[in-house]
Length: 227
Image (cartoon, rainbow, N blue to C red; front, side):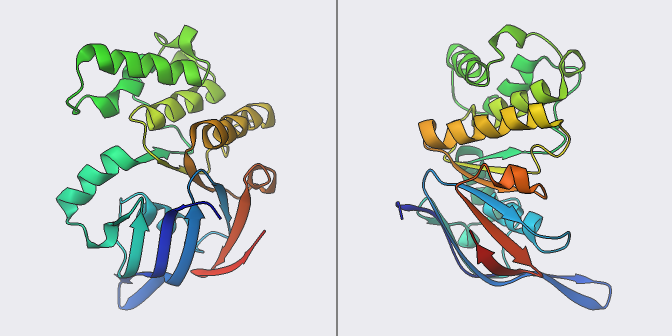
């Protein structure tokens, strides 16, 4: 196995719901190599999205260690975690989450606006990211002028524009037809293979999972098997 990007040891997440304690993840161990494209499958409520939120620093585990790119993010303060997330993780959503009134260029630029980069460097990075997803000719179009597949490619460009080592994708092809989905999956494969990105993708689609290097299955917060 290549050098690890992700090392989870005994990761658990619990929270109160009324009088009950819900544990979507329970003492989970996971290793993901640098540059690996990993698919995560399982029924609703199995803990997949909870795991994505922990890996991306959106949430913190209740117990265990979570080392990503050499940093145990489980021990970071909320402020440090926010700073870490901005430089280490790109999040790809099922429903794109683009700002409707902004162009593709402006949507992709958003993660860079609080960075110390000059305007010239920001624009160079945005143009590079849009070229990577083959949308250089659509950069001045708003989301309403793009197809669903093009909107998701804009979302991927936004996720990679800051050059994070880790990409997490929550059902990135769930709202697309098969042709558009296949193009997105090939793009994700390219990002892992040619650009060294580590990708963790949650999906219910076995065809989408087949595009990954490896598939893991979660059931009630437990890792059951891998292929």
